[in-house]
Length: 317
Image (cartoon, rainbow, N blue to C red):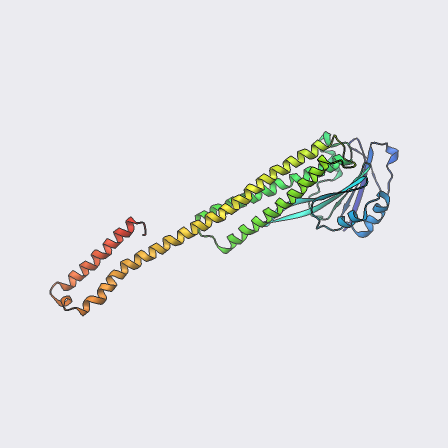
């Protein structure tokens, strides 16, 4: 169900919770309005687009929850798409946050009601003092929260992979383990792509002359980008761990299969020797001579014991 709320901010504090069509100028040049939209409908953006001059392409993108992280510049406004991540049942779930930012307003759009609210007015007011100035600072606070959501996801995937790696080293892997390992690898690579695109967004906000992004806020976006680079390194290492775990599991499986094959071959040789002797000697007259049978049995036992000792030294048994 669609939900909208608005508040006017000044110097990092909420001046007043207002209706969507409220005006801002009477609160001074330092004031701005923040509008939050949850699960928007087409009618929600009709009035907002007309009042704030939102670009039609940005509005169209904000109505689709399948966008990739990006930033677009439209005259004196920017449109930013971000992705919050969480891990559920070996699958990384994403919730989209869109932001329309100008010097006097910020409009944030969320598409997943179940996602944790990372940009409520209350969360922003409890944030660090350095982020309490304008819409660009709110955008930084949102991006910082989004990036923070990636760290537990990476940590949980790493814990799962290491646990699976230990199980794979201790016993034969089954089809479920292989499927799960590949699924985690796919989700990790997809998350890495999201991080890369989000890092590109931070890079543009930091290095380019972007409207409504003040020079005093750009270092904070650079700090977020540094965190993304750190995460990217962690994920690259995690992908390598998954690959090495699977390769090590393959080698161990081949080794175990080779050991079983050698055991079967050794016992087949040990049991095959008396079988061959027993098939030959009953047809020979010497077998029925005095002490012929005990001699044949002794020969069988000698050959079996000799083969057993030999295979034992070779570690086939």
